Amino acid sequence: RQSALVSRWTGPGRTADGVEVSILANVQDGASARTATDFPVAGIGLFRTELAFLDRASEPTVAEQTTLYQEVVDAFATDSGAHTAKIVIRTLDAGSDKPLLFADQGTEANPALGVRGLRIAFADPGLLDRQLDAIAAAARATGGSPWVMAPMVATAAEARGFAAKVRERGLTAGVMIEIPSAALLAPAILAEVDFVSIGTNDLTQYTMAADRMSSELAGLTDPWQPAVLALIDRVASSGAAVSKSVGVCGEAAADPLLACVLVGMGVTSLSSAPAAAAGVGAALADVTLAQCQAAARAALATADPAAARLAVADALHA
Ligand code: PEP
Ligand code: MG
Image (tube, rainbow, N blue to C red; front, side, top):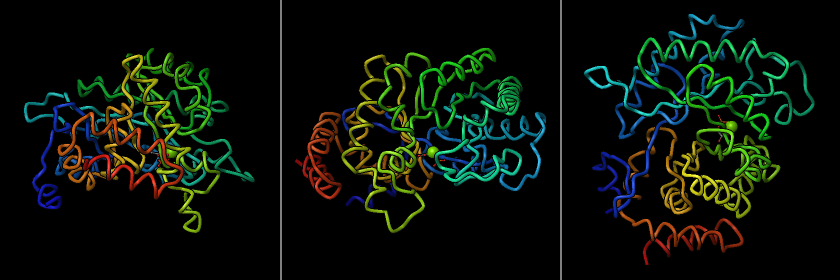
């Protein structure tokens, strides 16, 4: 029955009792943004800008970047040219598993714990400033209002500094919550920004001290781990308390069962590979918010991922 529902589900995202959840796409360039419109997604929850520049030896000019960001912002424009869809652009997350030649930090003993993501802007603020200039120019040229977020934020001061740069360009500012310190500091970070988005891939890696690329450690790099669920719950409830949008843009958002748990915790948008959207949308359409909340409570009371999955399946089908 579920697979028939999945193939028929066309959105928009909402629970059986009508609670809206934005189901969004992760993209990496103009072509993937246009392809995403073939799926039942309401917009883009994560544009990984660094992936568009992996083959570049030198920094793309502001004009080149503007053209790219315009393409992505325009992908979800309506036929009449209106820009109503949510588009979230992430500033460069260079380093570690996503090395960029023009932002190379040299050899680091522990690149995942090194100068990556927003940290590159500490030493070279121009790179971030030029990218934000290009995003602002793309917003002006299209008439769209993309949201802009920073990767790898560890402190509230980092969130404040980034938000100031984004807002002085007239744009909406957020940060990713993907370092455990940021999840623990969620209330203080939410006070500095307009929205947050939880990157469960890195949040899991750093919480469990287990490399996300290691297949040997897949049992640990599982977002159903209780410590990871507890941190996500902390961020979601902190966001709900101040009525700010809390997204999830890691691959956890592609798991239909976990999506129900995330919504039960208070997550307001789910972004992943667009092929996952129909499964997630169909799963949410089948359950009420109260069931999602019961599923979240059940998951948080378990001691390991297998028990959490079973408890959630039970809670949702009760
Ligand atoms: C994440 O860490 O969960 C995330 C969405 O970002 P990336 O996978 O690009 O690191
Ligand atoms: Mg990440």
